[in-house]
Length: 131
Image (tube, rainbow, N blue to C red; front, side, top):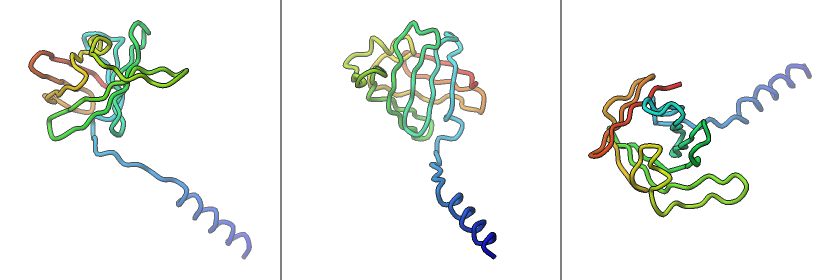
């Protein structure tokens, strides 16, 4: 009887201790590699976008994003500094290698599948593959 009680308590703790956060981002969540620049990646999770250069030529950046239908709005970029506080970007110079020309910008999601994403705005066309 004691053993059964321990099993019930254990299972109850396992089921109640895990808090899963669901995302409504669908196929957008995950790691995307820019087709025109294989070292550049975008990673979406929750409402955070991480821009990373795996070759370490360009500074890592984090931004906020919102998705409304086929619109992807990016804002509030920060230069990632793991040793001290992240620094808010006032201009878009560090964003340009990632295909972003402004600290607050909007893309139209032309295509989004489980393996391919295409983003467009008036000045930029970006293609990604998921990995």
